[in-house]
Structure formats: C-alpha cells, structure tokens
Picture 1 (spheres, rainbow, N blue to C red):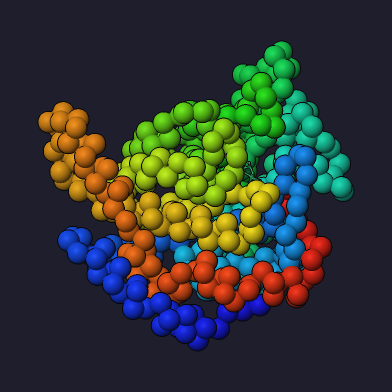
Picture 2 (picture 1 turned 90 degrees about the horizontal axis):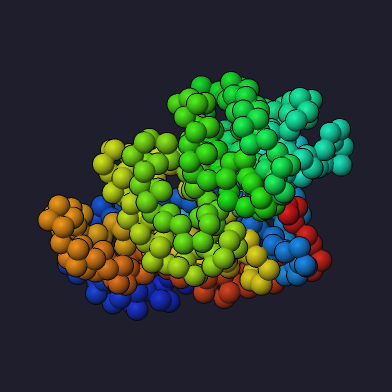
Length: 424
Ligand code: AFD
Ligand code: MN
Ligand code: MN
C-alpha cells in the first residue's frame, strides 16, 4: 500500500483552519521560529526493521495481522510511516533477519520511498539454524577462539551488507555475560571482547562508525560484558575514533540519570547514537514518551545544549533510532506515536532559554534554573511540530489519517491476517 500525496493534502485541508488557529497561538513569542521549524523538518528518526511486527514476550505473542513478511514489505511499512510524517526517513536492518537478496533492488526500493539505510545491526545473541558453533555462553567473549572468530566474521559480513546498501554504521549489541557468580572471569571476558571488537573495527570502511550498545541485564542476569556506559566507553576509547557509545533508553538500572550520562558522553565526543523507547522497570521497549516524557525532555535538553556547544548538526551528527516493540498496539500506530513524542521533546528542548539557564546555573539560582526548564517543558508545542510536518509535505495529524485511511485493514487484505514479521 502507498499513500498518495493528494490524500494527505485533502486531509490537511480539512483540518487546516483549526491547525492555523493552534499554530498562531503556539508560535506567538517563540524566538527564532523559522529556525526551529527547519530543525524539526530536518530531524529524522530511523525505524528498526524489527519494530514493524507485533513484539512478544516469552509468554506469548499476539499478532495484529498484516505484518510485513519480507524485507520489501518492511520497507513499504517504513515508507508508509514516512509519507505520513516525513520524519522517519531511514530504516535500520538486523542481520540475518533482513539479509537483502538483491541489494541493488532493495536500495532502489528504499529510495523510491525516500528512505536511506541507517546503522546495520549484527546478531550474535541467537543461534541460527545453519550455525556451526553456539552462542549459548557468549559470542565475542567466548572462551573458545573458533566461536569468537565465527561471531567476528558475522559482524564483518554485516558490514559488507551495510556497504552494499549505503549504510555507514554498525551497531553491536552483545548479550554476552554470565548468569551465575563464578561462571565467568570478568577480566578475560573483557579482554576477549575487546580483541574481538578490534578485529571488527579493523574491517570498518573509512567513513564508517561503530556503535557499542550497552545493557545492564537480560538475557544474562548476573553480569553483562558491555553492561553500562562506562564499559562501553572503555571499549570505544580503546577501539579508536570511529567507535562510539550507543545509549538505549531502556538499558539502565532503575532511576539512572540518563541525561547526565548523555551530557558526559557528548562532552567526551563519544556519544554515537540513540535507541529511543520508554520503560518503567527495565528494557520494557514501550512507546517513546509514554511513561516518562519529562525525562525524555531532559535528555533532549542535554543533547541540544551539548551538540550546540560542540558545533554539531542535530539532524546528522548522531544516529537517531527507535528501538521499541510490544504486544498490545498496532506497531505502526506505536511508531507514529513514538516519533511524535521525540519531536515534541526535541521542540521543547529547542525552546529552552539556554542563555538564561546558564546565567541561573552560574549564579547558583536553583529555583530559577528549574523554572526555565519547566517553562519550556510545559509549553504545548504540538502545533509547532504539526506545522513542521505540514511544511515537509506530511500529514498534520498522522495517526488520525492512518486510521481514516484504514491502513491496517488494507495491509491485512494485502498480506493476510496470520503474518508474522521476522525478528524476535
Ligand atoms: C536489544 C537491544 C539491541 C538489539 C535488539 C534486538 O536493544 O538494540 O538490536 O534488542 O531486538 O534489546
Ligand atoms: Mn537497543
Ligand atoms: Mn533493548
């Protein structure tokens, strides 16, 4: 299914009057309005190929139907999202779930939908049917050299697929670790992982980046070999200038101050990218902004402040990606909501009076500093975000239009009720 531009225009015209009224109200008194709108238009968030199907838990999975069965259909889904909001202009693939049979054709298909390929992801957290050696006790950390080599070769293979598609980064997320005290020699596991990563790093093309993603727990529950930002930063620092830390919002222990982590990684020039989602307990992978939108705003505030301090381009100098999936919503509706939440938090962060905030900080005026932040956070920026969409040729209200056009029903008609997307 594809959404014709005239359908978007038709819809926009039907809600335009109301939008104008809301926009004029929201825009009043905003300094540098055009610059903010331009930044919102430019800001694109990559969609992971594995978020397009209904996620499951280890207890069950309830498919909503019409899920993409092939890589082509996954691209079609991201294309649908992108035509609705012009904010999800990239797709992130997971190998071997998404091996392109004909890379040229896949690249052309993506280009037709206005999409590029974001970071490619390797997978050494599962055993594949035709795989010789098992990752049951880890991959890059494994005590057995041949198993490590197999995992290294897989990552190099993923880079090759990425090169063919025009991607320029690889995200390495390892489930390596241990479940019980005594199982692992931490020092050796670290050393082996580092050496394995060094071999993968050596295979990176000139313009490529490597993102080392950390996670506090799960599937290993006693130790994770890349368990937090400190460990990731250690690896990234030793690997070299093309290696960065990747922050996934759900990968911390409860109550971690993620905004502070982000600020320090940025200051060190080692923040590479982001996996957005939201959580209440752990790696819950819930819709971005659904649980703790204030935290999301505070993170964006650090991102904007830190990137501006280093003269970085918001839209392109870090990798922005959603990493969410769950059991109860239509995945496409969920992604539309996630992108909206990201844009809202970004817009609010752009509204922060950074000069006044700095002055309040330098004067140790704590109450003032809080007022400045919350002034921005409590501003209703939805009409600004909608205006940016309008200017980009997208729908003023993507979710409403998605429902009006009965996209899911159409996908079910096209693909069937009982389809299951590849992935977890
Ligand atoms: C994991 C990580 C990582 C990985 C993904 C696989 O967040 O990004 O690629 O899930 O589904 O929890
Ligand atoms: Mn992730
Ligand atoms: Mn995760």
